Length: 78
Image 1 (tube, rainbow, N blue to C red):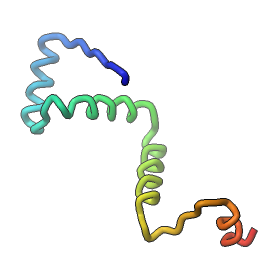
Image 2 (image 1 turned 180 degrees about the vertical axis):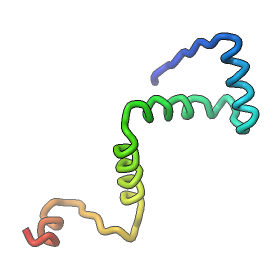
Image 3 (image 1 turned 30 degrees about the horizontal axis):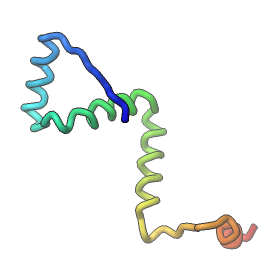
Image 4 (image 1 turned 90 degrees about the vertical axis):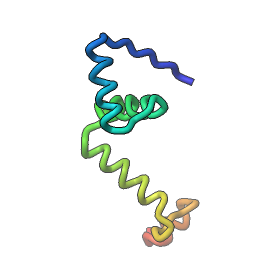
């Protein structure tokens, strides 16, 4: 497990609290929110869209998948 400690100034805490209240966010949501900011800054938009597309494809039961390269190459006629 990774621990993340964030320190905020009083005025920053006030802004965060207002944002959380306006968006109905509770404390349990904060780790995923902060993580998403970190990930977003790490990858550009094109890369993020490609990762989201790959995740959708991986979960789509209508898209053919392969458990080995032999079957993949056979379908590709390689």
